[in-house]
Amino acid sequence: MNQQFDYIIVGGGSGGCVVAGRLSEDPNVSVCVLEAGGHGDGMVVKVPTGSVAMLPTKINNWAFDTVPQAGLNGRIGYQPRGKMLGGSSAINAMVYIRGHRSDYDHWASLGNGGWSYDDVLPYFRLSEHNERFDNAWHGRNGPLNVSDLRSDNPFQARYLEAARQAGLPLTDDFNGPQQEGIGIYQVTQKQGERWSAARAYLHPHIGRRANLTVETHAQVRRILFEGRRAVGVEVLQNGTVRTLRARREVVLAAGALQTPQLLMLSGVGPAQELARLGIQAVQHLPGVGRNLQDHPDFVFGYSARSLDTIGVSLGGGVRMLGEILRFRRERRGMLTTNFAEGGGFLKTRPELEAPDIQLHFVVAMVDNHARRMRLGHGFSCHVCLLRPRSRGAVTLRSNDPLAAPLIDPAFFDDPRDVEDMVAGFKITRGLMQTPALAKWATRDLFTSHVKTDDDIRAILRQRTDTVYHPVGTCRMGQDEMAVVDPQLRVHGLDGLRVVDASIMPTLIGGNTNAPTIMIGEKAVDLIRGVSRVTSGTREEAEAAVAKSAIHHQETRHATT
Image 1 (tube, helix red, strand yellow):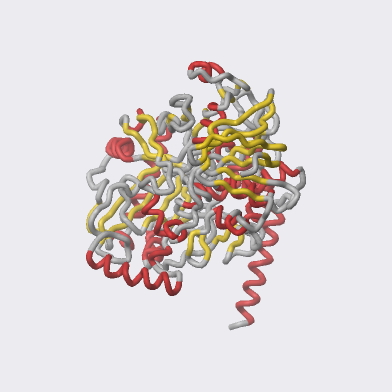
Image 2 (cartoon, rainbow, N blue to C red):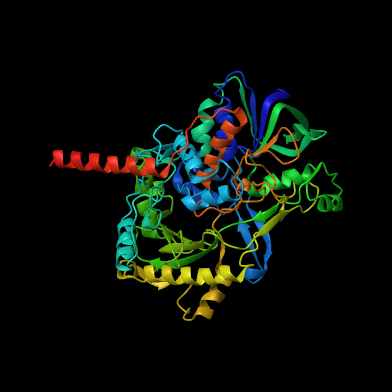
C-alpha cells in the first residue's frame, strides 16, 4: 500500500463510497478508502433476502448492543451496522426515503446555510437513477439505482386496500410533493438485486482507476495530527499497524456510532472525559458523541396461513425452491423482497406540519430483529416515531480502539415520546384490524391482551427498539455543542471533515440511507469548492410536475 494520498476516507459506508467515487473522477487526485470489513460483493449482499442472514448476526455486521435502556424496562437494545464496503446500505431493507421538506428547512434555520430542502434536493436528484419517476423531484442519471419492487407479492394490494378501509390517504411517491399517506416503497435495487452505495459508487471503479485505492479489513485506530491539522491515520490491517498520510484531508465516514468514537480516541471531544481515559486532548469539543437520535420502533406481528408470506414450513420450503429458480432465471419473485414492502407516513394529530410516524409493512413475521425465528408464516407492521425528543449519547468504553463504544439512544427518556407512540400504536392497530388484513391473520402474537392506554404504554416499553437510524453525534452547527460547520469541517481543526449521518443536527422524518448519500454528494462539492448543481425551488418543481401531468394525460388520450 502507498503511504501517502491526497484524501484518506475512513469508512467505506454510504457517505464514504460517495465521496471516494466522486473525488476519484479527477485522475489528478489520489484517494484511499479504509474499510474495517470486507468487499461487500457476495451473493448474501446481492440477493435482497440475504439481509435476514446479516441483520441478526455478525455476518457483515458490527452487531452492537446498547447500554441498558431505562425507558425500555432496563432492556439492552440492538444496533446492527454494516461492516463492509457499502456499510449499512449493504444490510438494510433498501427503502429509498429522503424525509420531509421541513426536516431540511429546520436544519437551515439552525444556522446551517446551504442545507434547506431547496438546497439539498438537487443532490438527491444528482445521486439518483429512478426507473419510474422522471420529474423535478427525481433524477435519472445518478449512480444509485432506485426501482419498484419486483417481488409482486399480493400482500401489497391487500395492504393498500386495508388503508382504504381505514380511511387513510394513499400516495404513489413518498419522495415527491406529498409524503403523507400509505403506499409501496421504492427500493435501492437494480434488476432485482441490492444496489448498495458500494455497487453504485465504488465497485465499478476498483482496479480501473489508478488513483483509487480501496483497502478492506483495515481498521483505523486513530487520526494523526500535527498541531491542529489532521495529517493522516494509524490503521490496523492483517495484524500490522501502519501510518498513512493525507496531503489534503482526512474524511471521517465511519457512521453515527463510530465516527464520534474515532474522534474521541484521537483526542477530539469532551476534554474531561478524554482525560479520564488517559487520552490527550487535541481539541475540546464537548458535543462529540452527544445528541444521539434514533427512531424508536414497535412491531405488530400476526400468524398467517398464506404462503405469500415468508416463513418456516414444509410448504414454504417447497415454494422457496421454486422461488430460487425463478430468481436465477428472472431476478424476480420472493427473493427480491426487501421484506418491508409497504410503507406509510401519517400524522397522529391533524394540526402537525408533517407526518410524525412511519410504518413498515413486512411480508414476514419479525421478532427481536429476526434474532428469534418462529415456525409458520405471518406478517408484521412496524410503527416508529419520526422526530423523538429524547437525546442519547455515544461514549468510550475504554481507550482501546478495538472495543465497541457505549451506545445509549435514551429511548423514551422524554415521556412525550411514549405518548406520541401510544397514538401511533392505535393508528397502526386500526390499520391491521381492517377486513383486508384481518382475514389473513390467524393469531395476534404480541398485542391481543392490550386494551387500555396503560396496556399500550407497558407493551411499548416491553418491546420497542431501534429501526436502525442513529444520527446526530457530530452535529452540524455554529454553537458550542456543534462538532462540524456547514461545510462539514470539524470545528477548530484543519484538514478534517465528517461525511455521514452523524452530522445531522436533527433526525429526519424517514429512513436515513438516502439522506446520507445526499450528504456525501454535497460534501464532494464542499471539498472541491465547485458546485455541480443549481438550487431548486418549490415553484419550479410544482410547475414541472404540472407539465408532466398534462403530458401524461395527452399521451393517454392519444393512445385511447
